[in-house]
Image (tube, rainbow, N blue to C red; front, side, top):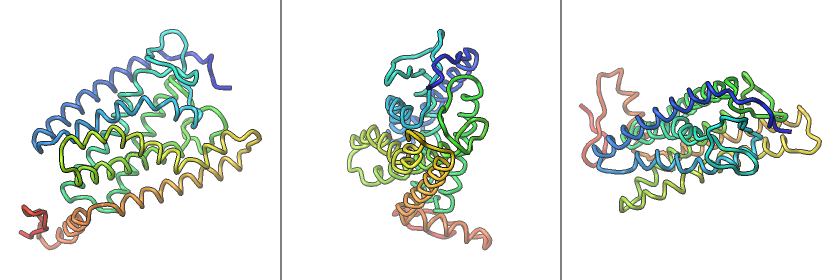
Length: 277
């Protein structure tokens, strides 16, 4: 049974809500500023896409056996599948998913992203997600209940790996969408793209874990094997996303890395071709 009677820590709720929404506001301002400079609503729509995408959280909760403590004093806005949703889930999506995705997408557009760097950012995103969720879990806001394994301070490692893969997929897919749009209005597809990449990563790569933790007669070895398989699937997913990096981006970044030792700096010409200075 989920921990339905666990007391909610109101202090942690207030801190996480205030901080995450403040960071969301700052990121939205930065995204708008970046968009004005580049004459595109792309970055702002990435933030808004994550905010709206958080309405799909209840499906994730059921699949991953996540339960938000809902004792008196909880700041919630709707309930689905008998799981009340706290208002900080939306701002949390922006902090965890949109923020790193915006940076990655910008680096791709500048021609400064390689496959190796993409994996580095997957690792950074994993650490960011782990830090955020460990605070939330141990601060008394929610729990991943059930037979999850490989926990770090009660946080299942497989969750962080899947979340990192989701961020990478969203960033790369958003960049591809931007590069192929013939009109700014087509960027509204980001509102659909975010939940698509969210569920593709968490359900597409995470299905072994989801099935294992919900088996009627599961066991620790079964869940552990499923978690390892899901982690492997997530790594494959990141590698697959990396293969969709624009050739110009990979070429420019790799040229930059190789020329640093020679005192030659690559720059993008007006046509997007690497020049040397």
